Length: 147
Length: 147
DNA sequence: CACAAATAAATTGTACACAATAAAAATGTA
DNA sequence: TACATTTTTATTGTGTACAATTTATTTGTG
Image (cartoon, rainbow over all chains, first blue to last red):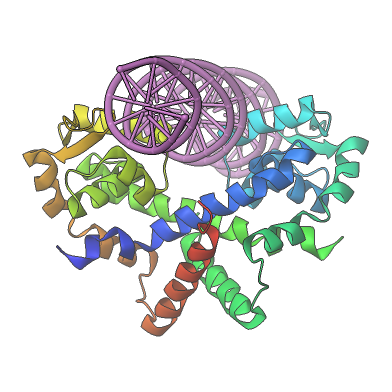
């Protein structure tokens, strides 16, 4: 068997599984907030930049309008945000958090720490984690360079 | 703004984006083989272990029957494999590659190298890559420990 | 100004992905 | 042997994702 085709060696497969497994660990933490993982990262972006356009949100989350439009409509239904078409440029839709959407942030405050505890119950090797993040950043830069 | 909730710091988000972006790089390489990414990893597993059961494939790919059953039916339609219910234990379905499915392996032989070239056109730092894979393996072990 | 080109969202169609449940078969145990 | 439990796969329902197309609007250019 050619080594190259062994599943064990597929670097993408590892990221793919890791990503799905971390999302699985998020699920019980996000459920009390009424958020899915995708909804959570959208809210993270909006807590940083309220009033952002769908276009800018799309670039930030690496999700296209086909994914975002239904997601944002659902979050609007939940009362977390408002989708408002710009008066200056009617092609653009800005996403504004409601008071409820802003308030949810404080409830989310402990999610990152809880997630870390869920994944690393025996604590984190800070040096190793730092190196890992650096490697991820470098890889991500390469991957998205022509987007 | 609390640092912990910044999108930039979400480790999962990086894996999630990286995974999707690598799959995007795979797409043009897999299209000539008539495979999606999910179909590709299924075929990788089957080229290693022909005749494997759906259950074992599920464990290997970290995908459940709700994902695998329709995928395997589609690959069967494409003539790459046969789904055969076991005679010894009729609950079990074994997946057997057809000649066409086996033959596809040689066409896939260059995919891994082409993917690396697509992502790292300036070459790979082997030492850094090795460290990265080690970190991924460690993280994956932690993530799937209670599955 | 007229109109081609570009831009931003939304829509449509296809392909996952998982939770929950169902169905069928095998296993364990009184 | 009866029958509850477990195991394996399939099904249903919900929620992403993305490619391709459409629609509406704005920008660029002669």
